[in-house]
Image (cartoon, rainbow over all chains, first blue to last red; front, side, top):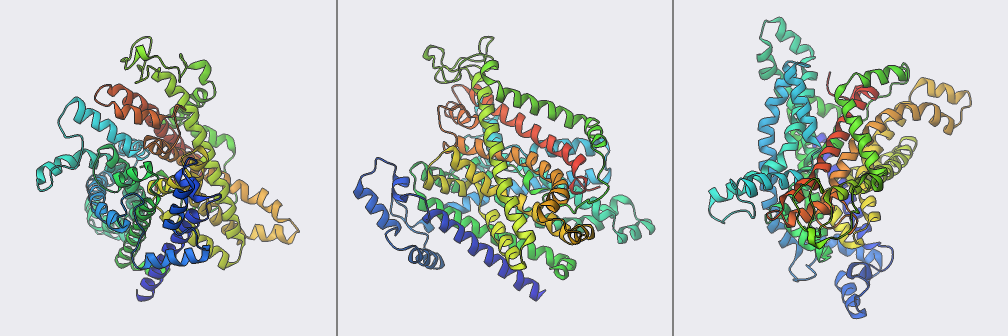
Length: 314
Length: 299
């Protein structure tokens, strides 16, 4: 286990460093003059010069690269071009709100997706399986921001059952939960289908294994075998695959936040992009990339902890 | 957000011999009603995209201030928008924009991913390892935020959009191509044809391409709905297709601004996004069952 952990941690660090280098190359090696591109052709020469100084673009590229990495290592993500606030504080202030939305969305999807996957796998190719399969495939590709707009129209505008905008009064938990229902629905629906399919496939594969045949020979009921013995094993690959999909979860949550005008990374990024405030946007990318790589490392390690076979293969 | 690109991209092992004849595959495809319906819808979308000027009842950018916010009627099936433009005509013209972005984006991703995949599969271990790391890093950048950061620097345009899509979708194709090249490299029949003097391009053409065609077609069909989602999402934020070009995403954004006044605008602009993403996903599923059964749903 020890060598597996070290290997995975090194790999994650390598991925993170490579991602940062890619970002650096895309930001700093812009063909043409970055100041003109960022500020538009109408910007004055002084504005451009100020921008270059602010972004450190007047230095040679290797110096810029080292400074970029050095700042990152110290947790300095640069400053907001408009308000002069440190980007790290802005992003870390918005991040928890987005994580809450993403986790609540993922949570209800897991609670519904696992039973659906089990029902499918217990009677493969039965009518329930076909129905769940159609539903799962249908919702998987639906953009969550579109679900957000539709549920906003139906439940907030037409029926008026739920609040449409914002995240609710701070301190009023009931109000905050009411404001979370529609966004979490929009973020999670695609995941219900995704998880149902993953659980079905993984459970069917596990049910083919030898030790399951042994349980069957002992006369244990199919239902009990599937839920008690096969499902825990089948969940291991599902955990790892959910880790890979977390980037999509975040992208969905970001757009849904904009639809419901909820404070969070989405609103931060949306305001930043309309004012071409690139340091803020790069900051959101850096922090979420770190989060994504960390979450994937965690799911990989959890999977390895639960299933010794993964450690040996690794 | 669309999740399809994550499923089944694990690179199915090769089926070097015994691929079923094309007609039996076609027959299996025709026997699947869901796939067939999806195919009809996709063909319909393609016809809308190609023949929009002949199909659309009105000019999609013609402004008629007196006809603002008309609800759906016999003259305007999906109503009119805040400038009095016919929504149905804009939806039909938007099909062309959406499919153009989806096709060029996935094909660019295919070119980039396949190129890197062949280099990784044929190259030394160090090259392979470096490219694997590169693709893992590319996948770890969160798509929408990354796209917004790039757009803030390079400005919103069709080229930026396609570049972002190519960049974020390429790792999927990279994996499929690389794994297939590695599998083939160790196959006896490839070694045999090499020893008989077959050139690399010839091996690529006779062995690599037929084995890759199926998985890649499936991957393209699965990526298209994801790309439609990304494009409409970015256009919804005002950072994708720029007005006055009719794009479903910008129409959604317009409809969203008037969501209380005229909810039919947002509903109408969302319908083609739903129809196209669902149709392409089911088409991809049906194609996978026929072309690439091993990576399909567990059986």
